[in-house]
Amino acid sequence: MNGLQFEKCTLNELECLQQLSLTTFIKAFGDQNSPIDMDAYCQVAFSRDKLKNELKNENSIFYFVKSGEIVVGYFKLNTEKAQTEPIEDGLEIERIYLLSPYQGQGIGQLMFNKIFELARKMKKTHLWLGVWEKNYGAIRFYERNGFKVFGKHSFLLGKDLQMDLMMELILLNDDE
Image (cartoon, rainbow, N blue to C red; front, side, top):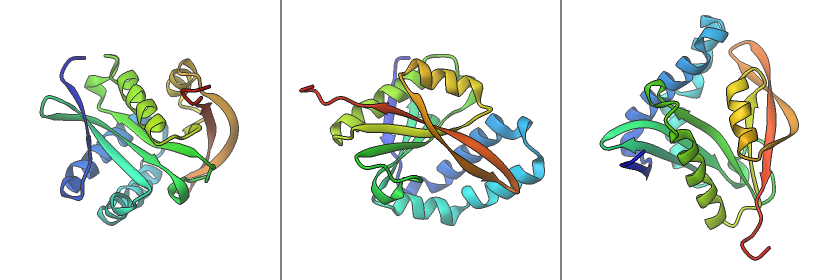
């Protein structure tokens, strides 16, 4: 898609990040989970204070994905102790979301290409993520990008204990 830009998200864009986070998460998972669990999770995970602290964390990076002036998605990357499961030389993709009208246009792949580029610049050897075991479309997308399941970890959505598949991609250095 032409005209796509990636811009680091700043504290000045907290409101936009919060709204985008809520919109994309609820659209992605709202139909498969109870409204009570979704609401409980969203109130904590996407609260102003939580997002503000995440934006201030030097080991977390948010990028907005823009088509012209419109923010159409975002991703969040974690390094060091910000990772939910610290992996040495790892870069965690904690969130990667795209507004539904922009899905199916190759933007998700462009987002992944940008993440690969950032991982190489940071000299990371492991790119990894957790994905809900029932998010079949995302799992297929990650597999097409070379990710393999290497474990599981639990994820609490409200009061519903769910399981995430942990998937990784070993990144080779340019000299290997």
